Image (tube, rainbow, N blue to C red; front, side, top):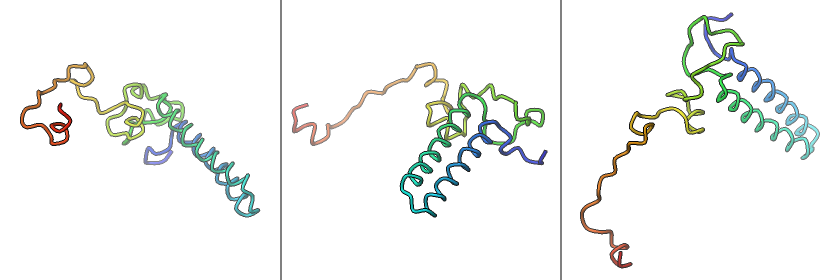
Length: 126
């Protein structure tokens, strides 16, 4: 096993395999000037991104950074994925991670607005 913890996940290898197939189909479409193969290859590439993302969100990926050595096996599942990873843009796109205690509990305080109304609102009679 390598010194670094990159790509040792089901999500990583599955996404790579699907993307490789999509790249091969796209390349074949370019070489044969076939629009059907090119569109099919692009569709497979898009599917690889979605499959990898879904697997990551279901716990078959890993959080950013290096995991402890005991969690480096391919079958290791990330049990913290449900709440989202703090620095993971994939989790943030899914609406997970980077939540503060106030936002997570629903206790958001709204401050009243004071001052002069905006010109457009004043003209509309609001």
